[in-house]
Length: 291
Picture (cartoon, one colour):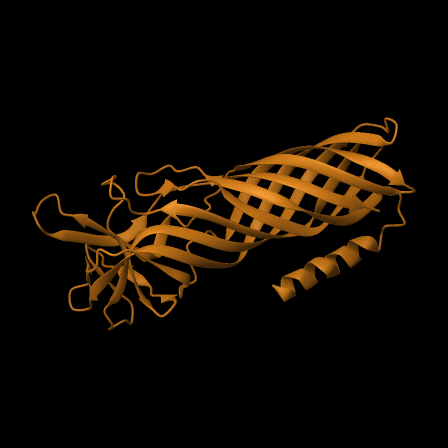
C-alpha cells in the first residue's frame, strides 16, 4: 500500500511539472464508491451493495475553453459480497476449497471434466463456502473527454465520458461456511460440520486471485467547479461506470464445484467453478482541488 501511495504522489509531481501551462490543471481527489456485480449465472448471487473509497491525483488538459482531456491515477479500496451457497437455493450449493492456514490451494480438473485433485496437497483440511467478502485494492487510471461550460459567476459545469481501467493490486477474502474434508485419494470433498464459521484474510496461492487482474468500465460523469480563490478550484462530481469486462475470474483456479451425477445416482462430479462473465457497475462520488 505504501508503494502505491508513493506512486500516486510521484505521478502528481510529474503532472505538476506542467502546471504553469494555463491549459493544464492538476490536484488531489478523494471520495466514496458503490459497486454491484451483475450476475449472469445461477452458480452465484450478489449479496447486497458493495462500497469503497478512492484517493489519488487528477488532472485536466484543455484543448480549448470547453473541450479537454481528464486523467489521473487513483488508489481504490473496495469490498463486496458474493453468495456461493444457500440453504434455500439448491443452485447455490457444493462449492469447496482446500486450504492451509490462510492459503487456499490450487485445484486442477482432469481431462474427463468430472474429477480432479488439489495440486501438491496431501492434507484433508477443506471448507464448504457459503458467502465470500472480497476486500480488494486497485490502481485505477481514468481516461475521459471533458466538456465544460464557460464561467458562470464563480462556477463552471462539466460532463465527462470515457474509460475507467482498474488493475488489481491485492485482495483478501473473508469466507463464511462449514468445515469440510478433502480426500487426496479420490479427490472428493465432504461437509463434516453443521456449525457455520468464518475464515478471515484468506488468499489463493495461484496467480488467479478470484478477481480479474484488469477491470474496465465505460463511465459518464457530471460535476461543477467553484473558483474560490485565484486559479484554485474546488470541485465535486458523480459518475456511473458500466462494467464491460468480468470483475471475477470466469473459471476459478481454487474453487471446486461439486455436482451430483445425472447418470449415476449417489455419485458426484468435480470441476473448477465456472461462473461465466459477471461485470461490475460502479457509482463514484468525488471531491477534489485543482490548481
